[in-house]
Image 1 (cartoon, rainbow, N blue to C red):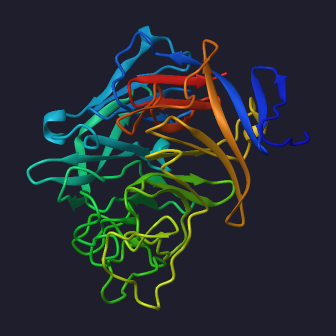
Image 2: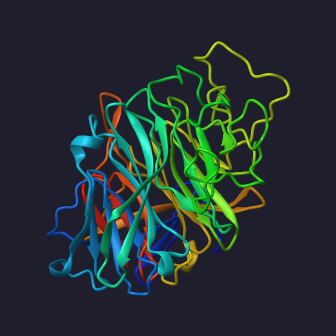
Length: 405
């Protein structure tokens, strides 16, 4: 299709979606439908397909509950899989709580899965291993509750979440800088700290006093002055990691402070800049300069606060219903509801599209209104996930679950 200049628009109807072209950037309009409308789904965090061939999914709620959703999405068949006490996890419910669930690559044989959540007194983030003893009935083994990792948190925010297993079988976990503004303790660049990092651990081994192993090829293992778990340095508040296995690419969306929101491709041993930089710009509120031998890795995509205020990472789409998005990394902005799709090749963006999501003939992520300088959007995307049919699931932090058509 030929791209036209600004203010000239072409609309092409292709089934259930529309493509519009503005200033040489496509806007893809996709119809969605709300599911689980009769169920209580406050603060949904993640939609995770059960890797047992049943087609069932788990809906993870930040308040601590995990729901089992049948393949047909019939709400009368929804059951509770697990519930954690919010009183033990949450003081500030904006960023604390249950923040991730991931299944072991050999779940069908060992029944293991991992939860990442906050705890109080003392304030900390924990990675916990649990086990299902009856996979068909999803019956938990109450005796198996192993804490692998605890990270002290000085503040209530920037806890990160959503751990991921890579194609190598190791678990990757992104952590925020500990919270508050300006990285006040300089944790992100502190190589003795696990905060402000992407970590890589072996959950199938134990090493010394650790409840996990550190892979031999981790970039800083046995290096003086470094924690061996560290895979990358210089993250602020990453939300979230995503492994695109077909392209062997690890994406990470990192929430900015006042200047830039960024999408990174995570590289072994890389330094992503915070808090020397925010995106590709110098972070001017810290009166310090990096040493000359530090090389920062630029984000593959960034946007300023004229377009959004808090990036929510997502997934690479590889479904069948929307070929125009195939191979694109799909993400959005929690503050404004604006959504993008980018295709990355050789660490460069080779395709960029805006996405409009239409519910009942109305765009739910249209241009936001601003009140006292802050965006007010009816859609707050917190995560983009994959359904049992390999199609998009949109989670709205305000309590709604949407499926693309």
